[in-house]
Image 1: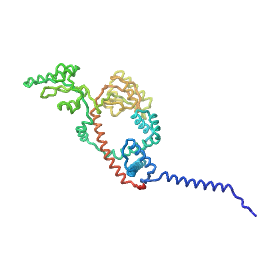
Image 2: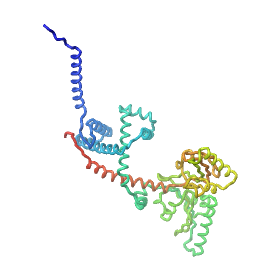
Image 3: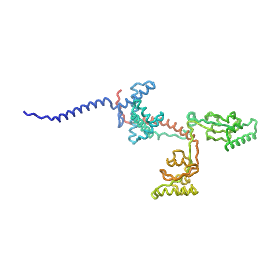
Image 4: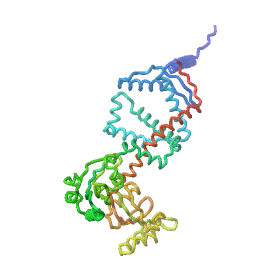
Length: 436
């Protein structure tokens, strides 16, 4: 009898393959039970795990605030619709190549942490102490930033705001409430008796003009008000206290709105006499004062015909000529390679912090008014700077306009965004597989 030899190695391999195959089938069955596609959205999908996670987050949040929960099926439909719209926007971002760097994410997270009076590390520990994943939180923030960028690209260009709209809002009751400034106002009243003739009126006006001249020369408004004013607040230095424009007499409101802090109006005629209005201070969420610098410079740059060494030697030669007393304006017109300021003798106009290259601004801030800096190098080339003047400018009017613009823009953006998202949803291919 012949016996066939059994290849035990082959049997072992087959058995191993069979066990792996059966295990993989079992694993796939488990995966299908754990997660499944509940919506096909163009070239992407929404998974059931995403829906369940988002629904749980919302339910937990509603319970924390003791808010009544809607029926679960309604909540799931609403959440799924939001996930579908998010997926559409993420696909738009992918096609447009929109990316958010780690630096941008970190900056946003740092801002969130600061709002909660925490460092970034404390914020991370706080999230993890609540049982949440900091990594997941970062990914969520990144996703939201990408979606916001898509929305700005899709919607921002459609929002138009005219100058008339801005003016109408600023002058509306709502605008005056939201943008209201408060003014600390003082007045001097030179009264006119009811029986006064034209000569008496002219005399009162002349006295008001004389006081205005004394104020411009530096005399104290409060002291002059106490001495000469016929107003009820004369003994308080003419102070009317803090008031909004609507709380001031209409005769004063317009005048006060155009005065700068520290300025006094021309005499204003009323039935009582002539008033001098002085704006002592102002405050409010649109009140802003800005440190500004007026400077001029000479810029020389390296080129194909001038090396770095030659450029440095040239700026040093110009610096020596300035020290010797040559005119800055003439040298700027002759040598400066800044086309925007060259013909103005290098004058740059009034600037605020952050307007210039960091190295340029660093030297600018250290240079005393009326002095000329040593040569310095910025990312644009070699400079010499002369500081002509500095001031703390009231830019509240501009800030008020910016605030009004932001309020109107936000409203229009929200309206336009809803329309845009509906359009995107309608145009996309969506196959929902969520069971009722």
